[in-house]
Length: 253
Image (tube, rainbow, N blue to C red):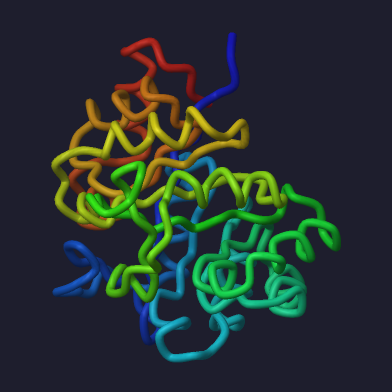
């Protein structure tokens, strides 16, 4: 039996509330992050991802007080991202209760920060948050975006995933900005393209709308499947996703 595919709810937080939109726009309220974290932990989620989605664009660090409150109420791994730029930022988040820390814009601005964080804390704590969209100007057909998908980084997404893994990220949170919030399915082609160039775990994100989508992502090579809208608005529970994946022959916890 292979390694279990993890099911991970994602909490996108702005101004102290969980929000969700489509392609990162038209955000609407989805609830209190601490209450939702506790709910998903109770439903059997394998991990939680907490993203402070306005931290980078507002030039500040992640809201650590909320991270601490979430960590005190859940007993599963908590991965936190938003505004991380340095070893010191990672240290503060780990001290606040995070088990893993995600980095996106900060790593693109100075890639060697990946090496520094991995050397200090070990690669198991570092997640590359890779927001990518289809871009015909890039060799692979996929380009990296920053600031909630609003800006092109001018970097090929597949090449960046490969470089970041080589530098020391422990896993890659691969978010399709085109599919985000659409509930029309993960970008399977993108998952496969990243899976081909890295050996670290890949978390598929963006587009989940039904159980079949989670199954498709796992079959494409995702080690974990992440979703927000379908969980926040009650379309699916973590348990339903796991039951459906299990029935399709996917190994889950």
